[in-house]
Amino acid sequence: MFHLFTGKRISYGPKTYLQNAYFGIQANYMWIQSEGTFFLYPYLDDNKKTIIYYAFDTADQQALFESLLKVSGIGPKTAFQIVQLPRENLQTALKTVDVKFFQSIPGIWPKSAKKILLELKWTVGVEDFEKITVDEKLFKDIVKSLKNFGYDTYKVKEVLQKYDGKITKENMPEVIKWIIKNI
Image: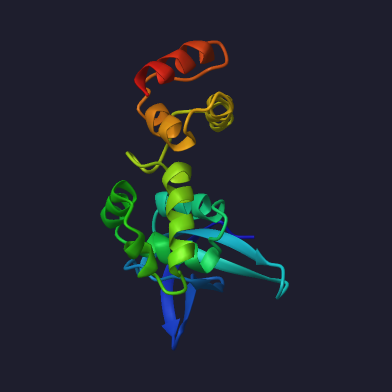
């Protein structure tokens, strides 16, 4: 499987191909770049028993695509459409909980938009959108622990996002105390 490809983009009708001097591959691609290095994500379609390639101009776009695939209710086509949206608009929609923004994406209905928005807000992050400095397992453990004590899950996640330090197993009790103090 290919993950990185250097060549040029060629379109024949509705199909897009990435081609270099040796060979070409068909890929879903809708960005501006027409020549250079492309980051590929090979997606195995179990129904058709084929590999579908999604091509991106940057590694950040590919990483966002992979993060979106982890959200239940988002398949590769929808994730690909979301990645193509301007990053600033996506960040604003997440911060303001704009359901209509996600409904504007073809194939996403009101109920799906709400579900995607809630999951995406906590999966991808609100502030910097690329990285959460918290170890995902510890993050989930803290949220689960405080939920068992009757705290609101979303409020805990919101406060935990604001925590500046690194969370480790050793400082987890202090982090929990800090969250309770700031709720």
